[in-house]
Amino acid sequence: MEQFHSEVISCRESARDYYELIFTWKGPVPLPGQFLTLRCWEGDSPLLRRPFALSSYDAAERRASLIFQKRGPATSLMTHLKTGDHMDILGPLGGTFPPPETGRRPVITGGGIGTGPVLFLADALSRAGLRPLLVLGFRDKNFVPRVHLPLGCETVICTDDGSAGQEGTVIDYLRSRDDLAGSHFYGCGPNPMLKGLHELAVEQNAPCSVSVEEVMACGIGACQGCAIPVNLPRKFLRVCQDGPVFDSRILVWT
Ligand SMILES: Cc1cc2nc3c(=O)[nH]c(=O)nc-3n(C[C@H](O)[C@H](O)[C@H](O)COP(=O)(O)OP(=O)(O)OC[C@H]3O[C@@H](n4cnc5c(N)ncnc54)[C@H](O)[C@@H]3O)c2cc1C
Ligand code: FES
Image (cartoon, rainbow, N blue to C red):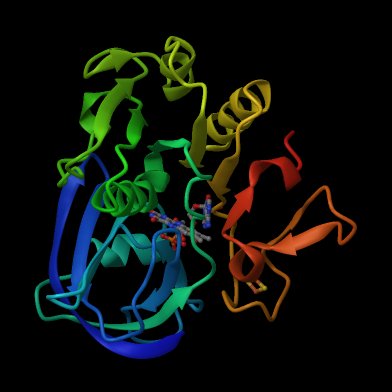
């Protein structure tokens, strides 16, 4: 982890209320699943740095990207970022997605604010010669991001209303397939999607690694603000330090 200044290369709306931010990266090499915290505003409001998962890293160009949703004060300010603007970055933070268990095909699901980290993961695994199944889910066609999709994956888009790709949720789509035995499941996105993925993995006795996006304060393991309940003797783990990627079987699903 390092704190460094970064320059914005571009920031553009990639879907309704979603933006792709590309910026220079001067820290240690980030891996899929890891995140950063950033500030790109003057003064005390918003007070806290904000966490975002990385959606790509280009080692040759030393640049990285993230995909964010406009939600509140910080992300609203971020929508105004322009080429050359400065950001203060702390990263890379947290752990990474584990590699798939030997012989298992990666089946990667994402949606909403979880789209960025799964694109990064799918790209890395396809570059490693695996051919992941990447299934991305959105409310409707307006939320499907216009971003570079990783080559070398079998990519499927799902929308709740069928206005783009397959109609239904990511989990509906996965359940319609009969070739998922021997998968290693990965996910990042809304809780119902992650819970559905966990249940599918349990039925198939398959590993399932999910990235959790909990509200954070310090982002570096000091405040306990991101603790979540787990089925372990420790009872609670911190998303920022112990995660954000967890084996779905240790999480408490409600
Ligand atoms: C490890 C990690 C990775 C993340 N990656 C991404 C990402 O790739 N893209 C992205 O758009 N967002 C991501 N988030 C969420 C992002 O940090 C929040 O959306 C952002 O901090 C909101 O700041 P704000 O000031 O705009 O809104 P706030 O006023 O702080 O929040 C607006 C609304 O979003 C909710 N919210 C705030 N933080 C989170 C959170 N962490 N998870 C769920 N809901 C939250 C609040 O409860 C509130 O309802 C990630 C969060 C974590 C912890
Ligand atoms: S945000 Fe402070 S411990 Fe995780």
